[in-house]
Image (cartoon, rainbow, N blue to C red):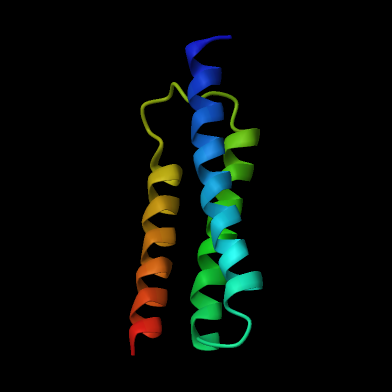
Length: 89
């Protein structure tokens, strides 16, 4: 396997783990309390899912401008920070 495929699978596994942990939190742990966090967490989940789809369909990762992946990480982090702020109030 080439280095590019290893990097692609590593990033996809990392994103899938983040998506699975957010989904587990939303659907199992947060059934009763903190329902105001749901929208921000679901937004982060959808952004992470779109980044996984982007990784799957992108022909190569060796291009030096991975702006979409960086933007997706920033947006997902913003959604998660909003969820933390909503959950702590």
